[in-house]
Length: 191
Ligand SMILES: NC(=O)c1ccc[n+]([C@@H]2O[C@H](COP(=O)([O-])OP(=O)(O)OC[C@H]3O[C@@H](n4cnc5c(N)ncnc54)[C@H](OP(=O)(O)O)[C@@H]3O)[C@@H](O)[C@H]2O)c1
View 1 (spheres, rainbow, N blue to C red):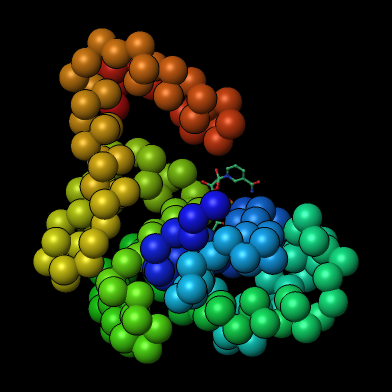
View 2: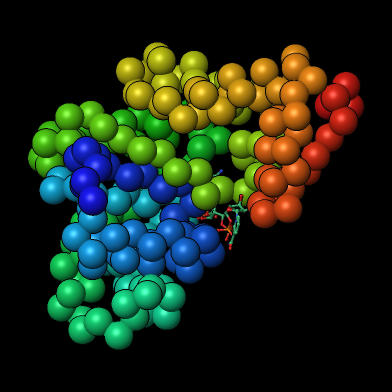
């Protein structure tokens, strides 16, 4: 299997349950199977103030409980934990994105990941599902700060599209999101 391109994975909502129980254990499983890029890092972001060390300790606990390789010795897990760091960010405070950008630029330069960043939103649905402006604001700010945000931009445009078309695929997507993620389904014209 081909390894993905070098990149940094930014997880918003890194102090939360999904990151602890599912995301980091799954990324560790990829590491264990040598399926991560040559140059790779995870940057956790959420409001809680945590040192890198505290974040790594918590993620180690998650790996030991939920990874498919939970019985690995400490050394193998510790090697992986060195790829993790943490920054305190409140996504509702635009100024916090400047520190995030500085941190990412520095990390990208050190690692040589060519500006490739994947953003994973593991935050409460209220922060990004409803179109109360956060999506538009995020895309606009990403443009202003030269931050690539392909997935968020694409999600926003899909949301616009879903309002315009009587689309079976979009209804199916809404139903799947409702069943698996608990996200609300609203009739058009009720927002
Ligand atoms: N847990 C699961 O098994 C599961 C399964 C399927 C889908 N999901 C979906 O995954 C998402 C995360 O779920 P979760 O269970 O991990 O929720 P959670 O435990 O409540 O975590 C939410 C995270 O978002 C952060 N956050 C909240 N407001 C923020 C803000 N303004 N700026 C930055 N970070 C903020 C919180 O950290 P701070 O308070 O430190 O900011 C926390 O890290 C939700 O959309 C949920 O519906 C979860």
